[in-house]
Image 1 (spheres, rainbow, N blue to C red):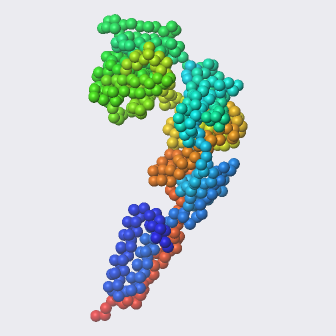
Image 2 (image 1 turned 120 degrees about the vertical axis):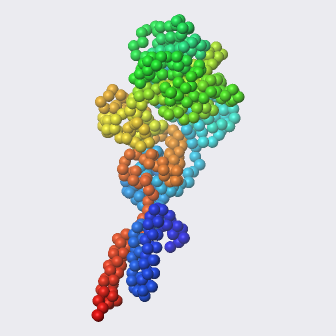
Image 3 (image 1 turned 135 degrees about the vertical axis):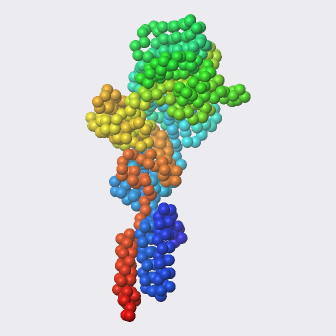
Length: 584
């Protein structure tokens, strides 16, 4: 047996089994030594052999599946991984991959094994764009290439091939380009993106599905302890955006100003309040406000005038720290929006460290947090830790509106318990497996796709969501409904010839993630990446191994040695003479 194989054998034994087996061997050696002192060599050999057999049985020596040949997967074939290959993978030493790799949904069925793969040089593309957009929101398409090129450009085309937006040629060698466009109507559309080289030749072109939906009108209540330019500019932005706004500002001890909405607020879906208003509320009034939040209405706290850190720690579990005057410039939050750079000052008090139940909701371009949240039953409390945005109301109104658009979109993320569709597959293909999840849906709920029903199942890596696999039969829009509810979602299915460079890039990314699963860190994360299938989870739980020695013969040898030792102790001439009584 080679040294490497010996190392693999002994490394397969857990430390606990090592100690038990070692104790058995030591006990056997001591017993054999005692027999040898009595000149009972055969008994010494039997007890030593029995101890070795028992130690091997307890150790369970196993070899990694190094003797088995690697499984070859032709990833470019229509059925890359067959059921027979999945069965053989349990004892395979490695996966030998040929082609550009498999998709995420396909790799999830494959147990973690060392990957042998040498991808060839090829053109790669990554596209990033929203699939669903509210009317009035700006559509942004970002394209990244695998290699930098000079002079290339990105164009966004309408369904009739009319150019909607053009990035212009890249001034220097770069890997990214982006375009923006404001949809004029609410409808489902399939746009086109086109990539041109410096000479104007089309390098890549494909569909971009987009669903533009009419946004639910915001019904906003504003509660402020004192007037401020920031609150005033926010009010104007909400009104200009079509929101129904009921604004209440305290001007003094007995003086308040109210700006009633143009229509009565039937169901307010957003609350704004400055920190001072919350701090000065009576305990009963504060409890009533939080009761409204618990029913599902998000409360956004503008932290610019916070002063009572102890109250926020006591009532909300939020640890606030004063802004350092020496690092104020470094702590400015930076946002590049609508061609303008916004620099917004942090609030005098902002969350610091880990606060129980609180998490970062949004970060700026330099990955500095500026929005924090805490779930409160069906609703949320959100802390906005920036001030002085009113400075851009005149100098950069479009950039300020875009920033608040981003903030409101982030704030409007569904809370736990609300249904939300999660279509994580960026490029669903006809005839291939894709996965979709519904956050807030109970396990076992029936998903209806193309007239077929299948139950949603829990996934370990999808908190508070149930998922199902779908195999779209044809390209185009696919409508899915959730049984027992009025919830429906549309998914666009791409053709096999759409965006080949993007398909290649996604498959290589998924393959790289699969390869990382065989590292020590990846093995720990493999359980979360697996589907909630007991068979798949068992395959990922431990690498494939084969028994070095069958356990049954070792156990039988131990029993035989102990029986022989017992017989010799009881019926051998020496033992019989020792038990015979002496004559007087």
